Structures are given as C-alpha cells and as structure tokens.
Image (cartoon, rainbow, N blue to C red):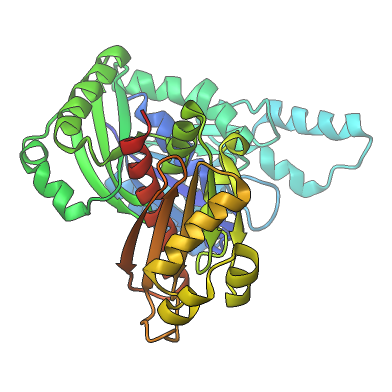
Amino acid sequence: MKQLKTEIVAVGTELLLGQISNTNAQWLSQQLALFGVNVYHHTVVGDNLQRVKTVFNQAHARSDVIIVTGGLGPTDDDLTREAFQAMSGMDIVEHEPSMDKITAFFTKRGTNMTPNNRKQARVFAGASVLENHAGMAPGMIVTYEEKTWVFLPGVPREMKHLASTSVFPYLQNLTGEKQVIKSMILKFIGIGESQLEHELYDLIQNQSNPTLAPLAQESGVVIRLTARHNSETEANSLLEQTKAQVEDRLGEYLFGVDEQTIEQQIIDLLKSSGKTIAAAESLTGGMFTDKLVSISGASAACKGSIVCYDTDVKRKVLGISEEVLVEDGTVSEACAEQMAEKVSGLLGSSFGISFTGVAGPMSIEDHQPGTVFVSIYDHVNKRSETKGYHFHGDRNSVRHRATIKGLEFLFNYLNSTIE
C-alpha cells in the first residue's frame, strides 16, 4: 500500500481572526484516517495572494497530496485559483457546464447575475472537475509535478459532499488499498501524566500497532490508542486487546472511553442505583452542578444546588451553625461537612457535596488562595468524608480545578459505596 503524505490548507482570513472554527480540517482528517491516509500538516492562511502562494509552495515541497478548502468563491478576496496559477503557471479556463449551472440558478430565481459570479466556473486546464451538487463552485483535482492538488469549497456542506463523493474514492485508488485507521481514547482521573507513563513505560516503548500516546488535558489524562489494519473488525480487535492491557494496570483510574465523561458516569451511577445528589457551592459558584445538568436525563439524579457564596447565605439558607462559622470559619473542613449535610437534608438527596475555599486573589480567614475543601455527605450511612486541596493558578483556574476534583471525589466515592 502506498503511503501518502497529506496536507490540508484552509484559506480564509475569517479563520485566522477566530470568527469561525476550522472544522473542515478536523472532519477531513477524521475521514481520511478511515482510508489509511496520513495527514501531516494543517495550515491556515489569510486572503492574501503572496501569503497563499508561499503556503502553497511549502505544501508542494513536503506533501504528496494537498487538499485546499476555501477561496473558490466569486469575490476579489477569493484567491486560491490565482495563487496556484502563480505557483504552477497552469492556465485557467471557464468550465462551460458549471457556467451553465450558475446562469440557470440566477434565471430560476429571477435575479440578475453579477459578472463576478463567472469566477466560480473557472477551473485549471486539464483538471478533473468535481460537480458541486450542494453549491455553485465546482471542486477540482489537479496533478502538478507528480503531486495531487485537491481544491474544495470552504462551505462545510459543499466540502463534505465533494470529498465524500469524489475525493475519497480518488485517494483510495491512489493508495491501492483501503486501510482502516481506528482510534480509541481512554480517560483517566486521579493520576498524573508522568505516573501514568511510568506505569505503562514498557507498553509505550514497545508499541507498534496499536500505538499509545499519553496526553494531558484539563479534566484529567487520556491515552490515545491508534490501530491500523485493512479490516475494521481487526483494527477494533487490536484496540480492545491493548485497552485490556492498560486496564489491567490502571483500571482504578480509568473512568471512560472516547466520548464518555466523568459527569455522565456519575449520573449513570446515581440513576442505576436510584440515588440522588445535591450540591452546596461556595467558591465554585454553580460550576459543579452545571457539569452534571449538562447531561441529558440529569434531572433524575441531580436534585439541584444552593450557591452559598456569601456567609449570610451559609447561615440563613443552609443553616450552618454559628459555632462553626465563628470558631472554624467558612473555609474549613467543619464548614464543608455541614454544608454537604445541610444541602442533602434541604433538597432531600441521597448524597450532598459541598465546595468551600479561597479562589483568590486575596487571602480569606488566613487561608491562602487555592485552599479548597470538598465534602461528601452520605445520608443513607449518615457519614461524611472530606478532603482538603491546594491548587495553583488564577481565580478561575482554582474554581475549575476544584470542580474537577469534586467530580473525581464523588465518582470514586460512588464506585466504592454503590453496589
């Protein structure tokens, strides 16, 4: 099977400005993997003739297949054709069937066609023209100096249509065989990237097929497994075998696969056992509950929350004792425990969870920013479990990390107590 170094170039200043996301490149990479086509580079360039030409020259020098999205429209800033012509010297001609289609479109609508719309029917002489059933501008496949250039519209529905119907079959013929590349994401929490890599060191060092790649993310650590095979069934089998090896060593930290989230797992655990959760949130200000209620069907397990940022809310709404507030303070293990127990009673939940601490930038009650207490109250067993943490970072980072630790704490607690 011939391996093709493939590159995706997206043309459009709106991408550089962040006005839209480059979802075209993401989708193309995902789909190309199914055909065993390796994508080595993603490039984004603005609507400037010289810069587009420079990017095209770089891509031509290092890649076998270059897929360009965008810049095929009717306006002056649509410069993809002009940039490639400046690089290659290839002639541009008007494609009569495309021109007929554009003319018919305006006639049917009863509107005048402006002259610049003719630009959309311009193609490179000798190109394989790809009819665009979802829009105006056709796509093109061009062979230049033994490199394959694919030009596609930037509108996602048009790009996907042309890629699926014309481009992928063409590339499959170039490779000579369909090879499947399948990936699986394993998600871990409660273990750092360095420790995880240490535990899997021999598997990572001896990897061939599948490959293992540890990656750190805000919500934990993930391992991406990637397998290649000409059979999708066999590729999936390779992934499952490697997953089993990883799970044997690190199963206690593994909470999900692919799109599964820890909040989804928590909701599933609660629903399957008929249990419920309620939260009392001080420094997190509702962030924890927001994570839970983002899951469809969360209402069956999440009773709600009380955001008790102010001391008076802790006192008058939750009913935290004056003794705790005065002697221990709002940022304390004792306050966190009462918060979790009180919210469980007030909202009638099986479990209560609470968050209190100092997000920063100023200290509170002699506690430094980053000090956090999280408590879980178990109404059935009438007991509490509380953990103290110290996080680094700015105000929002502390709040986010406290939320993630709360999810981890609750997930592990539910796993150990729910049968």
